[in-house]
Length: 114
Length: 115
Image (cartoon, rainbow over all chains, first blue to last red; front, side, top):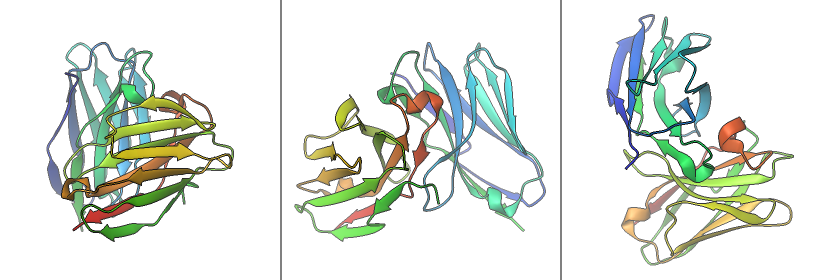
């Protein structure tokens, strides 16, 4: 069964610090991997998308990396801000699949403390 | 504001009841996707409509149904509600049928509580 496991489940860091969130997946083969940010009470918003041939993708202070050989991805947040407090969701898509071809992780709940 | 409008924002109802959730996609978007997000669970894809036609189906229960109307808004009907149906229900929309590849936009969700 295709799975996406994220760690840690939750994380608390101080404002200004960096952090790294992990995503391990068993989806194989896969087409692309996305990271979403979901603020409390809001819908997810896409941060990055990487195909199987890409190793890294940045979006401002967010940098995602992908190792397709080990089936691992990470999301690195630099110089965290209070507004980074949210859940971060990793999503993997199978090749050729439509909306039913996505597997969502449960997310990492990140809290930034002042 | 993402441009995807979901109503109501909150809904509390009793077991056994039926509710209807509504989604208006962004202007110009023809596809609508419905997702369920239970507490501490990942998003679960329910169903996708494109220009009024069902396009893809996920783990949608038989008690649930959806449709997309000519004006492109969509409704998700949940019947014979159980406590386990309590969740956030999200709608997303995209211009084309392949929103999962090219990008789609989520609404703010409807929080359903079944008591």
